[in-house]
Image 1 (cartoon, helix red, strand yellow):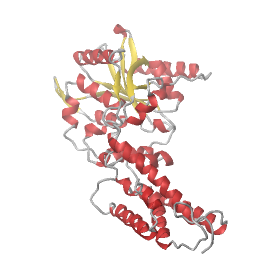
Image 2 (cartoon, one colour; image 1 turned 135 degrees about the vertical axis):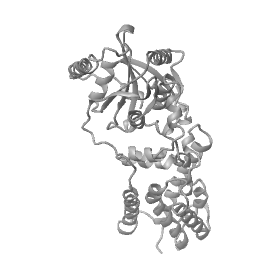
Image 3 (tube, rainbow, N blue to C red; image 1 turned 90 degrees about the vertical axis):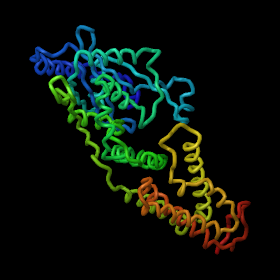
Image 4 (cartoon, one colour; image 1 turned 120 degrees about the horizontal axis):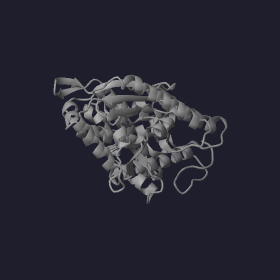
Length: 415
């Protein structure tokens, strides 16, 4: 879904593989399309690329392929490009104001990139009238012009796939929106995010941490089309009114390249246990360091964890209140990572501080039993044990040390 997918690579076999693959595709056209004498000159194909191995490729990608010899077009139009050289790139990324742009490139070059990355390529030829095809081509050509190509990217409501959806809806005179907007989707935005990132341990956990309750709300099928494969699946089954009554939108549905990568799960699974093992593993390492190796004082570890947890809480608050990352709003993970933990570190009444930490932990745990607001189970499994142990340690803390540091945390002595 990102521009970096299209970075050119200097590999010796690319030209050979690209040429052979393109000849194979052209032979497919000659056998499947050449027999249709009544077909309009402009062919419109929805192209859907499968997920890749790299984290930014997990959600797949899609584009619109236009073939019209009369217009000299054999190009793929897509909306998934961005420029690292744009002004204030990092700041715009942090603020949620990253600018993407539309572009077109030859089908040969486009498909070779995805074959090289071992990503599947599915092509669906759409049954559009000459007027609809012309409307779409004019829109796409206009969108890739320098003065029109830039747009403000949003992960869920304005990404490369939703732009393809909107272009097709324009060509069909609003038929997509009228068919799919009234229908409730089978999965939420979080469900799709979880299932598509499940294969990457840290990416999955990081997204679960920063994404708030807004992406847990029910969405329509139209909204689910932020995932390219969802758009392809729905169009394959779609019928809409035509001159001769209801007609299928997809004339042909072919796999131009089949990836050997394992496909993502169709629905999100239960993966909280692997994160619980991670949290318990961190506690075991801390226990070994303090009790067996005796290289660290337990309260120093508690202090360090609360400082780090508070810092993460500051980041979550910043993303919610001071950026355009709408998906980061209303984040209940603040019950686990909270800027107030900095006050707990400096609070000399350790028992009260520990009770505050435990109460917040129990409140976070109770979210699982309440009506669905935000899925937090994986974050709770990974990090709530650390908060609970920290709270208990603060309650059981005794000042039997020879000296204390300025924060009131013992640094030497034995109990």
